[in-house]
Image 1 (cartoon, rainbow, N blue to C red):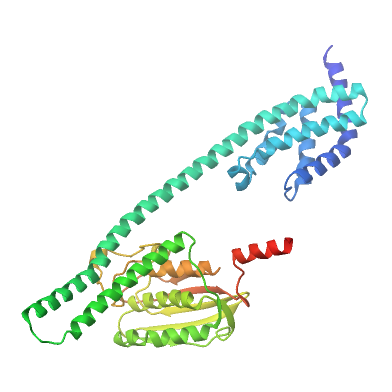
Image 2 (image 1 turned 30 degrees about the vertical axis):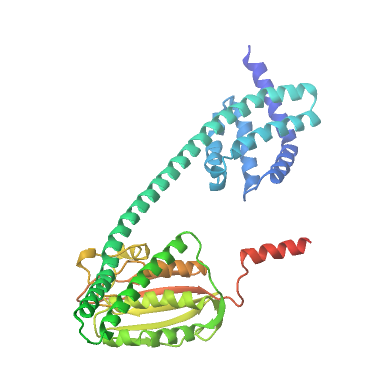
Length: 416
């Protein structure tokens, strides 16, 4: 006896839902479009929601809504999660309020009571499901963030250990050199021997220069890590910088019986705004790396091309190459390959050791300019020497970028 009236009531509610559907779509769509950043396809999602709402009313089973609610909960953006926003809960709550508003303005009192009596329990069910889903998504996000923090802390600890090892090895060599020459000078002076001390002073200066280079590299890495690297943008041609580097490194290349060739390329004579000192430092570090890992008698070539909005510079060598698993490590701080104690201490000797800061500094400088760097190599082989190709991307700027402070002052002047 109870089934027929229930069926009749359900049928009438379906008709009422069909009647208010256009108005519901209009009001909910406009309201949510004003109140939040509506993503593409939101109108289709509203259609899907209303269809499932009708299905839930017909079957008297709100579980029809689950799949949609799960999709919505999972679609929370990274910003939503970081700011603690419960976006879908907000949507459902607004839908309830807007449904009541539409019903009151377009249905009779009895129709409104019947419809709200049927859909409010479904909305309530949706809120419960969404709250659970969003909490699960948020917990997963927090767990992921905690793992990232833990990984970062582990990398920091590893970097600290690497710093201590590098400092002990790299700083010890020039300090020992300076100390040795100073002791020799002291002995000669005390003995009263009137011998020239020029060669001793030259040795000390070499040690001091090496020590200063290591300290400067460590300071540069610190500035890069803390976004404190200041760039002095000036107009210059890539060709001019490369030619200057070739002259600067000619003695080193000659000592290693290597060849350094620069090929003019499209864009090499174009005037661009960069920090010439820093860009030359970055490319110098890359060339020094090529010299270090290319056997005596090898060749290093520099070329490039113009890409949309970018100049690409390629530094190619026929050295020992880099294995695939190490092609990312070399751009990390202290990312030395092999055992530190087995490396020679020369800065440009074959496979010579270093603090492992040259390529990370190059990457930091290029990224500060808005560029990037990566390496390609067929692998590591000291016999066949497959070589490596370093790709450098530098944005083409026709004027110096405005500093944040200058931009701020400009905005204040415009307001005045």
